Image (cartoon, rainbow, N blue to C red):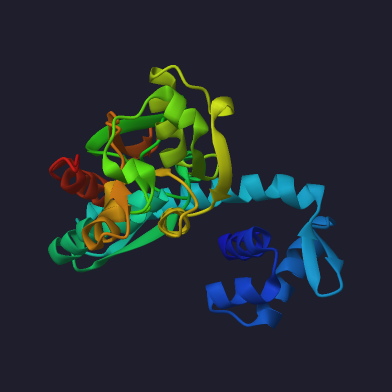
Length: 298
């Protein structure tokens, strides 16, 4: 068994599609299929059920995927350590971040990091807080960034900057006039929320809990999978939402959205790394850039 076979298996298993895995790996479909078949035949196991043109992981494949990811993570860590011995000259840094941070906070940091270390490439992946924690825990990412509460014993979580979220509505909404909001107002309102696992959702629910409100008391009429979808639904009159001011900046400036008169507590943007894994010099350098970012509280 080779690392290349493990990489191919993991790519196919994660996509559950031979052609997409081949494209991602820059290999032919035939080469990918042959590698999977060789691994299955060598160990007399079956990783995938093939139904027409589709494939799905078997129970053996699902269990082996966790092992393959762990081995690949260790191999990546070893390669990273060797690169570090030569200094920050070239290499890759895998970063996983939640939507708000990846779209509105990290791009400027990545540009500055590349200016300082032009030989390095940052692979940025996006997922909600739960997926970021999983990626760092499994070694898929060396560094993560989240804005939601995170309780994971294996992970070190460090606030690096912060912001103050805003409740926003369409210009014609009664809340756009600026009157102070009561808990009764919040209960009566129709809300647009991000999906479960979203840091934005969790932070807003925590702020509401401080006011004595539970999620079950709210009238949530839409649950959408991205900040931009929530923003556009609210601008279209779907109700109220809580979003990062970074997400709403242009819409607020243009008058497409209005802030409601509801002061929310600041929320931190947090860097996440594994407590026990080696921290590459590139990850440490990127973390220093993040620490130097002024607070984003608006």
